[in-house]
Length: 117
Image (cartoon, rainbow, N blue to C red; front, side):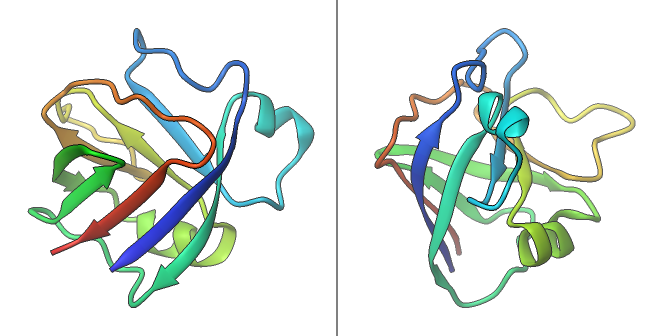
């Protein structure tokens, strides 16, 4: 299981029209903070995220539809991934976790994000 707490939400971070939430750890540039959701890990049993796992943001529940091949290493090294609330395309992003349903979440400082079985 991975458990994260949202520390801050950049002014340009949440745009339901693009369907993306960019997550980064606290050690990131000011420019990236403006367009990202900054999080800190509270619990990490494993960095591996797999199709079929559950992702929860507060009381909003999603199922992992696809995991890009860079997600695990990016989470481990720079605490980064992209939550993508769009349909998985023919050429998906290598740094993204695609989620179903395609309903954009409500996220705020203090939100809890968990990924697990």
